[in-house]
Length: 123
Image 1: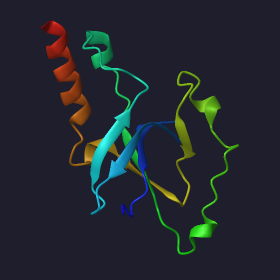
Image 2: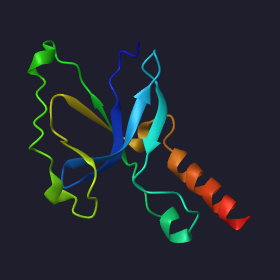
Image 3: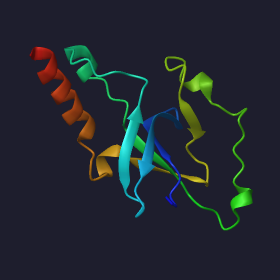
């Protein structure tokens, strides 16, 4: 069983996190899979400049798990009107840790994926 709950990859705007990719972990807790459905890689020059992974937000286990209350009414939608379907969480929550994407061992992944998409579009 995977002990680490899914995380989210996305961006921070006005001190709020907008998660657009579900991040899953292996049994050791390392990131193994990113499920991104909101923005497709088309290999177009303009889309290759747009990044949606600037931060990784992970759940922080509290001593008492019942104290982690996710209020579904607090979606922070007003901070991200351009993204109608995102996983939003307040960045300052004690139950979430937000890490800048470039600090992760796979910080260049989005650039590499865009490169592959551009190569494929050129074929």
